Amino acid sequence: MAKNSDFFEITPEIRRLSALCEERDAIDPSLYAKYDVKRGLRDLNGKGVVAGLTEISDIISSKEINGESVPCEGELYYRGINIKDLTGGFIKENRFGFEETVYLLLFGSLPNQQESADFKELLSKYRTLPTNFVRDVVMKAPTSDMMNTLARSVLTLYAYDEKSQDTSLPNILRQCIEMIALFPQLAVYGYQAYAHDIDPANNSFFIHAPRPELSTAENILHMLRIDNSYTALEARILDLALVLHAEHGGGNNSSFTTHVVASSGTDAYSVIAAALGSLKGPRHGGANIKVMRMFEDMKANLKDWTDEEEVSAYLVKLLHKEAFDRSGLIYGMGHAVYSLSDPRADIFRGFVKSLSEEKGLSQEYQLYSLVERLAPKIIAKERRIYKGVSANIDFYSGFVYHMLGLPAELYTPVFAMARIAGWSAHLMEEIIHAGKIIRPSYRSIGTQQPYIPLAERK
Image (cartoon, rainbow, N blue to C red; front, top):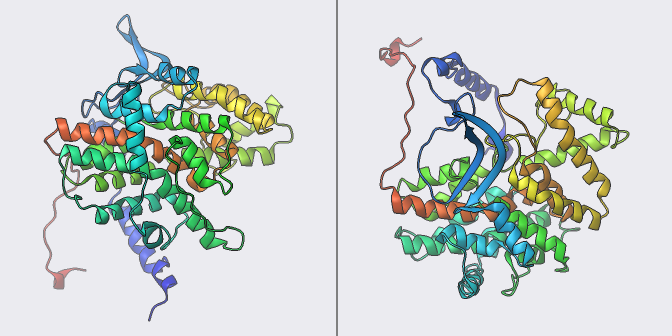
C-alpha cells in the first residue's frame, strides 16, 4: 500500500508531462496584439474591457480634459457615496462603520437609526454556527491556509442548510447575511485549530463566542485574543480596514468571479467559495503578506532605516531582482487602476501613524513613509510605465495587522471578512439583472489535425 507522501511526490513522469503541457500550450505573445485580444481584459493603457453594468461601486482614476484622459487623484464610491465622506462621517461621530457599510452595499442607502439597530441585531442573530460545526468541520484536517479553511467551511454550510438549493432572492439574501456574520468565526476558529494542531504545547485551543453588543471588528479581536482585551484604537482601525476592503468596483477579480459563477444559476455557497479562491491569490488578496515580508527583509539588510541613499539602493535592488524574492517588484506600490493615489491608502495613513505610536513602532512607520516617498520616483526612473505609481492599501494593511497582533495566516481572511459584503451585493445584482450566463469568447489559434488510430501512433 502506498504511503501518503508518495501521492505528493513530483515524479520524473509528472515532470515530463508538465514539460509537455508547457510545450503544447505555448502561445506567442505577439498574437495577442495581432488578434486584438486584451490580455487580462485590459488594453495596453490599463483600461478594462466593459463586461457589465453595476450600481454598487465606482472607481475614478482619470478625468477627461480637453478631450484627453488625464490621471487624477483616485476616488472610490460605495453606492455613489465618496469613501472619504463615508469614513469621515462615522469616524467624526465616533461610531463603528462596517455594519452600516454592509447595509449600504446590500440595499443602496445608509440606514437610519432604527434600520441600523435592526440590521445589527440581524447580524448578531446569524453569528451562531450549526451544532457541532466546530468539532465536526473546523477541527478536522486543519490547514495552514485559512482561505482554504474558509472555502471548505462555506461549502460545508450548504449541507447544514435546509434551503440550500433555493436560489430565490430572499433566500440568497438570507444566506449572504449569514455568511457575512459567520466569516470572522470561521476564520478565527480555523486559525486556532491550526495553531493548536501544529504546536499543542504552546497553543491552547480555545473558543470565544462572539458577543451581541460588539461590532464586527471588536468581535474579531475578542475571539482571537485569549484574554479578550483590545484598545479602542485597535478596534477602530480594524473597523476602518474592514470598510476600506468591503468593495472595490465590479471589475476586480473576485467580484468578477462572483458575477461569472452566479450567472450560471448555482447556489450562493458555491459562488462565495469561488470568490474566496480568487481572493486567495497573491496577485489579489494575498499582496499585503508580501509587503510585510519585503519590509522584514529590508529591515534585516539595512544598517540605517533613515538613510535615504541606503533605502533607495535597496529599492533599486528589488527592481533589479537582486533582493527579497527576486520578483522585480516593490510590493504595495502601484495599482491596476489608480495612478496618482489610492484613496484607501490616503485614509489609512493617518491612523497607521497613530497606531504605530501606541505600539511603540514609530521607527517602522517612518521607514514605511520613506519607502512610500522614494519608491514612485525610483520606479519611474527604472521602468517605462504608462501611468503614475503610488502606494496602494496593501502597502499599509499588512503593517496594521502586524501591529494588531494578527497572525499572518489571517491577513487575507480579514480581507475576505470585509469583501464578503461586496461579493454579496454583486451576487444579488447578478440574480436581479442578468438572466444570461456570462460566457466570454476565446479565439482558437490551434491547427486542425487528423485522428490517428491507436496502433499507428508513434
